[in-house]
Image 1 (spheres, helix red, strand yellow):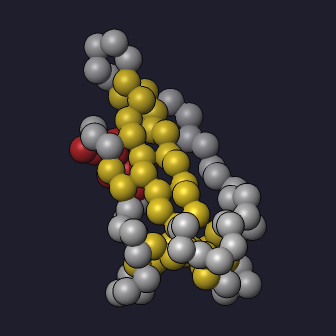
Image 2 (image 1 turned 180 degrees about the vertical axis):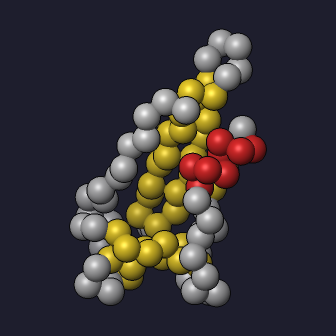
Length: 89
């Protein structure tokens, strides 16, 4: 599945860049539980996500790990999601 848009289900506003937010704030963050992905076919998939900084022993951020979870209330599991992996910061 190719993801096109990540929106807040209630407001229909796009979510901010979670990876950029973690890099700027240096702490673990999550998306609103009311998050929906809209794929190229305009099908909605409900999920939650969180991201955490990857740090070295000195506390310098070298990257971000992001986890996606399909919404347990959804009747079917979220199929495999293509994830763009970003290199070192």
